[in-house]
Image 1: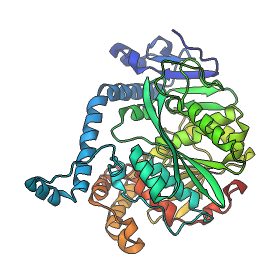
Image 2 (image 1 turned 180 degrees about the vertical axis):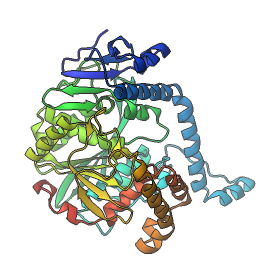
Image 3 (image 1 turned 60 degrees about the vertical axis):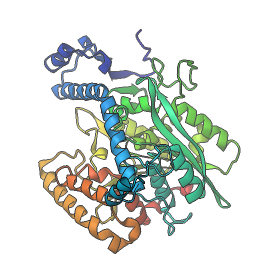
Image 4 (image 1 turned 120 degrees about the vertical axis):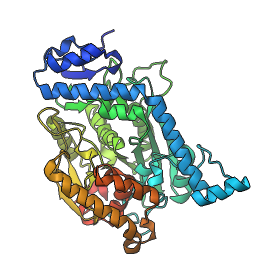
Length: 471
């Protein structure tokens, strides 16, 4: 059945489930994309070879990820179990001793002490005690720690939020993706309520290293063009809750076949219910990596639906290592919307992080960043820039400087605890991964460690020019 795409003025959708080998080869040599079963496009032809090449790469990667999703997940589970087995038994030496003595501690995957692969890079659980509410860095640091926590299980979240941070965990959720036909989007809500403030934090989970479904969302270069809004990354919209064959109707059509709710609609209704109970309650939205993309698209759909209450109470958007999510027209739409509603938007980029430099900002893909970019170097010195340096990452001229920078980041991992304090000590697992930066410098730069450090060690001055909603 053909879907109604009337909500968009133009579109290009990739359907890896309908891929055939000969169709795949033909797209490289034929401009007639309407004849390709795995491409559903408003355009009949695609003359630009570079765009057809990117479609070719995107569809192959998605197909491979789907095919190998189970072994990828299995390997990831084994790796996580091994890392937690080591930490639960006090390291490799103690694990050997415990094995001999028959006292091996087996970690429980649902326990508060079990960490995800991402969480093993940075074991910090406490908020920075030197950054209190009223400090310009407060919401940035809280947002990053919430983004970090979003990768963990529910028991971990309850322990960290309720007991360590002395806040309230409102809920941890798995949301449905109509296009992947499974629950692949995660987010949680916490409440930071004291005598002088009442703030809800909505944190979207980013891409986990062994989550093939999340990687499919990242590599899905489908797009929709919404009238008066612009072109938006299809993979991210699907993860946020785009309804199959319906798009973004203001009210969600009930579908009894969905085992879980759609992220945007469920979170919108939860927030409406909370905010309607207290005129002083506000909220912020945050996320790392894919989570950052969902964090900035959430208010975009709110604006599309003219959700005045939610836009008025939105105190800020904080994204970390966020990829590009739309074209130049979408960027202009968002900048106007954010300005009209006085919503601060801070896009954090650390060093050579590859993810904010994708998808490409070029004539083939046309993706553009927008808003305030806070760019941090390896000394955690911050600059406010329109675009991060080396905006498309792959550059022969930029490769050597990035590798040299990665070398000094590796050296820094041995000295930072002496210069900045014990809270910044890096473990062998992170140091080992930093070694890969000598060849692929943009990969370890995307890790959560450096973003946590940036919010704590960076200057507070970049937040002082924020709007009244930040107060």
